[in-house]
Image (cartoon, rainbow, N blue to C red; front, side, top):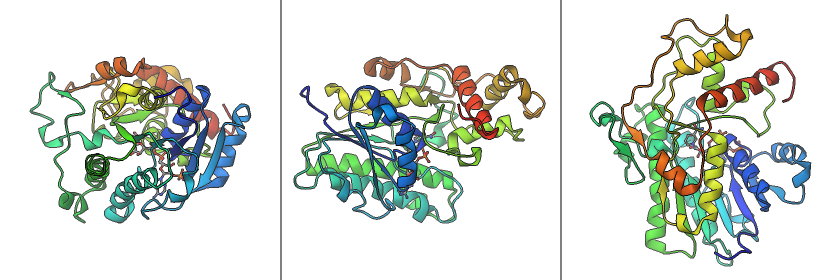
Length: 347
Ligand code: NDP
């Protein structure tokens, strides 16, 4: 890929937790970024918070990505795309409508937009999820030496994921799987002029850089850590032992976009240090005197993460040039930031 490329990177979900961190990683590398958002007001707040990047950053409004075609009007001049937009919530009434269709149609929409006549996109990076990789049924039989890699897919069928009796967690896993599969199928069948990279992180925690005015607006994964600081009893359920710091993940997206050799790859990227919510509670108590009497007492302190299986994280980090931030630093950074936000102070 030539030195002039990319001249304009489209980041979808740019006013979300991971998307905004990706925007910052790209801006700090001197790249021009167009972010998509459903709220231009949020986009404007992000621009105002980055006056030094005023000439590099713009926002465009999109509607609901359940509608295929949602990105057709935002492609002018774009030659690289990072697609993060997808619903991340388990507070839904209709799994298919609120979780599965936006995930799948969002990917179909970005593929269609990248392939519109006249567009010059050369690479599309998609934020998939470890949810598209994990085989929950095998959790207790794989053993600590088994490593999940980009070769693995969860075995959920489409019918299982849209079953109204399925939990939102199962629906999310199905939505992310069939969204990502739609992208790889498109590349195989249509042979478009752009290539594809997908990233499949497990839990993502860390500093928020998108505009929120209250802790109640925290994204799903970070809200689990804040709930612990607020005394959540019981602790949130850790469905996987893997996690990654959001800044490390944002760097990985930028590297996946810019490194020619990443084209066509699917990365399972997790810190080599597993986590538990018990460890998060310990860290919060140790680091924040104000939290000592608030954090729930009803948990096993010092609980070691159960090594059910491994992630391909160390190899992928080396391939993409990423260094992992520790869980302690990540928790402290976020809790400090949200505490300041809740007390009306900006960090
Ligand atoms: P956020 O909820 O913070 O961000 C989600 C983004 O998607 C927002 O920018 C939102 O737009 C956009 N979006 C959601 N639903 C729609 C919709 N129906 N129509 C248009 N836009 C929509 O979540 P994260 O940043 O955590 O997640 C980003 C990506 O990372 C997702 O693809 C998710 O599956 C993946 N992921 C997240 C993990 C995590 O632990 N956080 C773990 C693994 C993968 P707007 O800003 O306009 O509201």
